[in-house]
Image (cartoon, rainbow, N blue to C red):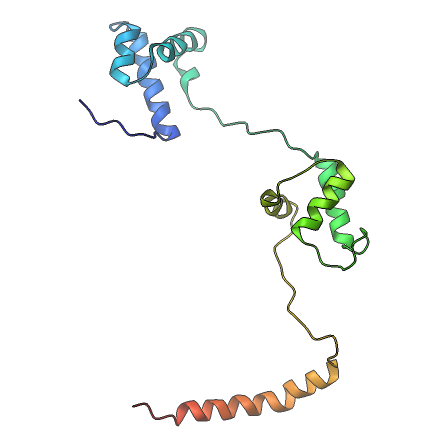
Length: 171
């Protein structure tokens, strides 16, 4: 008895189909024998035989999986992109920060389509957006004071810290 893996890759399944097609073309083995030899059902070999008869062995080659149809058309995706670029405030949200939940709500309100939140990252990436989180910033800070602190104090603090690291005794 030969070892049989639980899972075959798409390439391995294609090899098995092509081998089955070759054996069918030779005509030396019955469909039942081919099924036993390749470890598939007789119905599968029968299906392969119909395909080989109709389109030849090339019909047994793997095909690209089609996937499901897009929920939003290309025109709707472009409209969504323009809405996102205008900002969350323009779309009726209390702050100008987009979250996946807000994007989901916008799509549902405007296009009557619901997306799972886990998929929205992929959709937004396909529209040219990237995941970004704004750095927290105090509302009260004064820009001029911050810039002055960076220019005057920060370099001095860095020098003092470097001196301390250099003069540190380990032991």
